[in-house]
Length: 483
Ligand code: AMP
Ligand code: ZN
Image 1 (cartoon, rainbow, N blue to C red):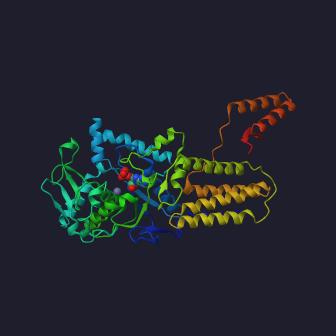
Image 2: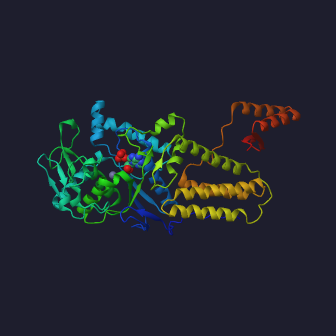
Image 3: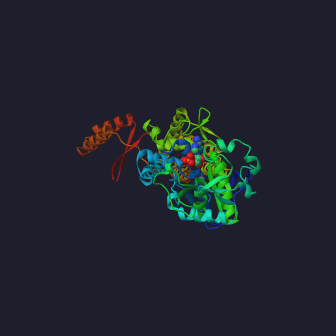
């Protein structure tokens, strides 16, 4: 009787629109290949625990991935692990550990954290240190094509002057770069001049951390990692590249320049950037010291799903202010979702049917609004609004006793569908039964065995007064919260 449109028909994915930072416009999304969408997401630098600003970016990317899947696409995602750069080298040396030992801890922590935040794993997590041959080969190609040069100290630089197409993403003109302070001031740009390092010659501060190359000992620059690994796992041209807005310049601009200069083919076709997570109007960052790690917040009693809910809320292109109030709001919203699901689960089996035609249109409307909101450049505020109006409308039907079991099941099925994207509902979790309630239920069983039905009924009433319903099933009595 109840029909929910399930959107996993791989042959006819739904129309999606994204704001492409490259064109600065909302564009319809058309993938390059039928088989899968290829998605590259800049990953963590594993020198410390990631902060929840970083996780805003990773949760946004998870929302993107899950939305693509919800809309019927298969996704191949690669996320790099930056396990060699200035910060990791400094950290390893300060800890007196090898680079591998030092970064291993933070790689493990990262995977634990993304699990806590219910972030779906990517297909590939390439680590920079395992892709030196690919990076060296790419740098060699840039040298062969004349857009890179070798400096006296053995470093190799990309020459922006020899690559007039530079600036496709941020519309920065190569000739303007030398005169602006932007390059110098950017936290990721280690070079004071516009040319950026592809290979950094060995310095004493690097200790034992170096690799051999045709240009002598050294290590790769940061930008080349992402070009080499994205092209290896996703091919030279792929669909979507994402990151936080701070990665746009110079990191993503440099990735485009070195990839396209090497292959002569367009690199990523759609660039999606999330705005920052801010605290008191400032970007949350390690350098400002205004950050919380996920672990800090868990210690303060928040849960992974509450933090996920905060990070999901709002539009990804708008900055999101993190506060304890937003965490409290998330808790209240999730409680509302849990209560609603529990109410639906607990609706008794009955032979009555709903007032015909009431619930089905509510479900269809909610499904359409939710889907259209996601299709519209991942409009999460609208998607959540669709969910919460469904809750309000269906609750009204429950209050009026016009919702029967089949409609409750159809509503639960729709929630399950929504949760493929949201991943914040705990639809199958029965609440824990307190020990004293368990023993009261056992006492009632005992009274029934003794055929003391008056006592059994009295205990049942007491359980009800404590907020628990006892249901006798063929498998024995079952406790459920009496909402
Ligand atoms: P990093 O480890 O600094 O390279 O950052 C990893 C990812 O987190 C990148 O996509 C950054 O753009 C992103 N990121 C860093 N700080 C924030 C922030 N406060 N809000 C949102 N994204 C951020
Ligand atoms: Zn990157």
